[in-house]
Amino acid sequence: MDVEQTLRERAEVEAEIKGRTLVDWLRHTAEEEGEAPALSDRVGDGWRTLTWAQYRNAALEAAAAFIGAGIGPGEVVALMLPNRSEHLIADMGAVHAGAVPFTVYATFAPEQVAFVAQDCGVRMAVLEGAQELERWRTALDRLESLHTVVLLDPDAVPDAPGDGRRYVSWADFTAEGARLHAAEPGRVEERAAALTPGDNATLLYTSGTTGNPKGVFETHHQVLFQCVITLRANATPHRAVSISYLPMAHIAERVLSAYLPIRVAGHLYFCPELPRLGEYLALVRPHGLFGVPRVWEKLQSGLTAALAAAPEDRRKAVEEASGIARAYMEQGQYGREREPGLAERFAEADAQVLAPIRALIGLDRVVYCVTAAAPMPEETVRFFSGLGVLIRDVYGMTENCGAVTVNRPDRYRFGSVGVPSDGMEVRTAEDGEILVRGPVNASGYHNRPEESAALVDGDGWLHTGDVGSIDQDGFVYVVDRKKELFITSGGENIAPASIESRLKEHPLVGQALAYGDRRPYPVALLTLDPEVAPGWAAARGIEGADPAVLARDPRILEEVGRAVEAANEGLAQVQKVKRWRLLADEWSVESEELTPSLKLKRRVIHRKFADAIDGLYGD
Image (cartoon, rainbow, N blue to C red; front, side, top):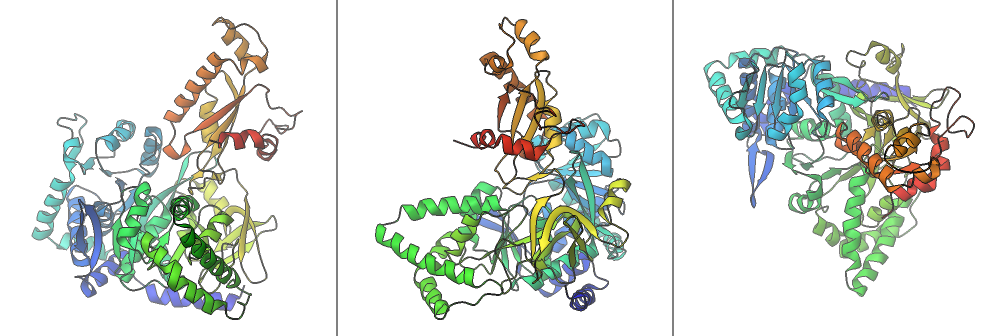
């Protein structure tokens, strides 16, 4: 690593954002690009669009409403809203009020909602409708500090809640904000002007190894620094068009949809749900697309089916052009040289065959395609390379406010997560753990002093918990996770212990192992409790005590199925176990599935029961 270059890059970025906050960025863009489109929601066959001037004005009025409702500087406002304009208006409204917006995963179970709400002391909540309000019931019962609930759906506002809180529709809330701001604009201006780069711009929660989410505050300085280094690594055009479809509780979505468009006066289109991404790509034709591997795999599946249905001569032309494109991308990796004439052959194949295909699927304007959060299947990278689309891996986490390594258009290597982002330092510890140092690092976890101390050491190095390596050219490779978290192919970080503890609540289930690394959903291996099962069976007229026989009995399997369903009720959607298998034999120290202290040896179980796990992902 060239330390002098890193420090020079850091100084350049710091100079660009010195003294600035998100409020400053939004004001500048609204003044300079006020009539340019900012936010668009699909309404029927058309779009409802706000300009940058309208967006900022709506945020100011929302800020006035928050202040009028009693929100104070630094207090947390929770948001549980879909991807739509109102989400960002509420978010930036809270920021302008000096508060800290916090998007809660819509898939969180009520207990999880209550935990995070209590942990950060939520004062106000903005929710979509009745379903979201129901998820908040447990939190509302426990959290006296939460004094106001705003509901996007006016029909979801309770008539007589009787709990002493104020419930109001979004329409009435913002109308009151407009009235207050018109009468006394100085209140919002005073709050916004008081913000400093070191103040918190948002709060996100990330799962820990214990299963309890951990809060991470991101400051204005972190957010702005991350946006600038992201732009320096990607050729993002001015007024870039993009699609928002991932949860705003993800740091990647926040950077790419909530913050970065402010800097480039971008036009953000909202896609209401992931299954419709393909449809929206064709409508929007974005300049860039970020997707976890599962997103790219789904797009690949749809395109493969469409290409397979094409006439034979068309398929042959595509295959030939794809071969040229793949060679062009593979030989373009850092440290390699393309064979003579390959660039010319690619340009011809691209113009005649591949560009029209990209136009059909809405990727004809993309200047960057990025993935992160889980390893990208090599087959998927090769498939899109064959369409002339280079998908580049980046690496980062909530604790880094986004990406800290990146494969650049002119400096990439397949299989790696790229080189350190501008101004960031990356190295490995003696045990191979990847360490990161730089301005985007979080200082620690909210209310977790011990875990905060373990996260960032005395020299400022953030310990990622990932094991990897760095080659002689500075490319970083993530080899494995030091901790027990697994990451699904959809990019969800999941703590297996939280799933396993719920599965074992039923007496028939002796042991449980949850799995889902690089897979589309979690599955579980369960063992039958040899002491409980015979008695449970006898009480129901089931003869025999042989665990091998009992584990196959339909009545026991039905009961275990109910146990899994009950466990799933307390889990977030992404944590729910989709398939499971009941094993007759317990895991033990002697059979090497357990440590001497009776902890699961996960890798041993993964290896010994690989066929069983693979079978759970079969058709």
